Length: 87
Image (tube, rainbow, N blue to C red; front, side):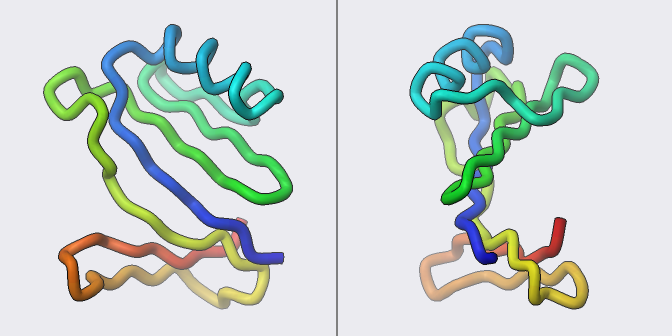
């Protein structure tokens, strides 16, 4: 399975969890230190990190890929960081 990974910076973690839970019709599968949450569905892996100064910005993109043997990252032609990883 290969699902898109999107990492966003958010202003308020609790408000964002409520909002994305409704949008994705699921609760986060993981919450850490009241600063980070991860949502996993069949098609998307969405991570949100509380960072008021960077709120609304894309942190990076990537793929959660069952075939990935190890974590890797690279920068695309537009300067966007892409990560590839297994669960």
